[in-house]
Image (tube, rainbow, N blue to C red; front, side, top):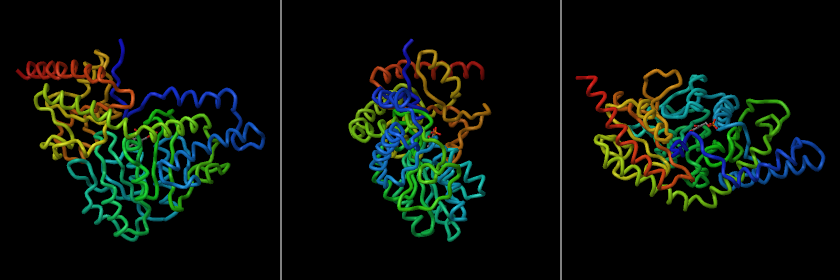
Length: 389
Ligand code: PLP
């Protein structure tokens, strides 16, 4: 059975052009890029070409592009690196990805509450700031709900109430959809991950703007301007560069195409499933009446009276792959920390579903969900009703 893949926020397929660009660096040009001979110089040049693409896409000098092993590593380097260099407190929002939240918790930093859409509360942020703050981290778009943070307003609060602090944004979910170069001008540090936009897994970037001071967390041979030692993943970096080049060339048209499909999907489900709540859109979720607060690829919904895991099981049988924002690694039945931060009732949060679209998504994929999900929800509600009777 063919698959209708709606889990692009978790990972995307590697684009054909990306794979093609990477192959020579496995087969022919495999030298260590720090070497002195010609093959090493060719590897180094390919890395620097990718560095230039990322630099343009993130409004950062090429010397500020630090390639590393994942979005998680980029986030860790920003937070631990700033705390070690600046010796101060770190601050983030309660809805951050765990790659930000866990480092902040380990450092005993401040976790600031959010509003009902999962956006950091700027009043609470102001109260959490002060002269002792080394770094503030606020994500560009949330990985579960797709809700976009108003980084301009948040940057103003940070610059006013903690002017010495570095401002970091995790743009891992933003890059395929938003003008990150524009937003980059507001921040000192930006994290990206290649596998979220058609590149390979295991490659990330931390962009360090304006000479922001960080202390390296992985030390050794001094690669990547001394901020991330370890032999560079030449093929992976080349793949990230190629994927970024395609995103930058095609973003506007891709966003428009995917936005139409996402709206058809969300409108179709709203019309066929009673009592569906669309995060940050349905007025009862505290949202507005359009989807402008969310990235184009995100359709995040909650279905009352249904368990996410059961819903996922039923739609997977029909070839639809999605994810439950409410699941957690231990299998415990707690709602996600993002939905908890948003103050969602537990019963609703337990029926959450993240349908994330990406550059390959088609109308046939959308139709497949519309032909599958309403019946799955109805079936589960009937079963729950019978069990209760
Ligand atoms: N930050 C956000 C917002 C993410 O969505 C993810 C991945 O899901 C990460 C960081 C981690 O990226 P990686 O998978 O490259 O470690």
